[in-house]
Image 1 (spheres, rainbow, N blue to C red):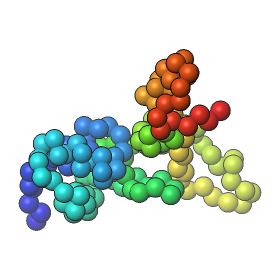
Image 2: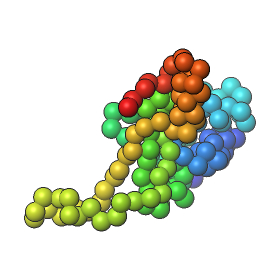
Image 3: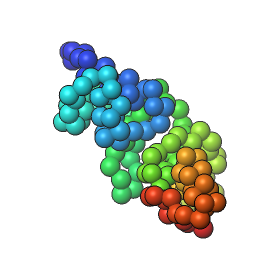
Amino acid sequence: MERTTRQKTAIQAAIESARRPLSAQEILEQASLQVTQLGIATVYRNLKSLVLEEKVHVVTLPGENPRYESNAIANHHHHHFQCTSCQRVFDVHDCPGDLKRMAPQGFVVERHELTLYGRCADCNAAGEVAASAGTAPHGCADHA
């Protein structure tokens, strides 16, 4: 039986309070607010344990490091949005529905995953402010 530590509790709380998939680094930053001297190795060790206990779900996006979200959220069908500026990932609770018609004839769709890419509200607002000032925002690419 796994024992519950202050570190593990802080890591799980960081994931649950975020209400969006977090990278290990984001989890470290949030959990460190509760438990000082927390290291990335401790975060990964506890994430592995939380995944095995089915309290946390791994979110995998193509070409990205894994992110983690609460199983309470992961157990409900949803998709993701990744900001092309800040790289944060957000949950999208809307779904285009039945995608069977898109599969080649004779193929059977068993499940689907959808990721939207663009700028989050924060980066979009920063881009609009910078555009009105005539400067490009730091870290924001202008994709038309």
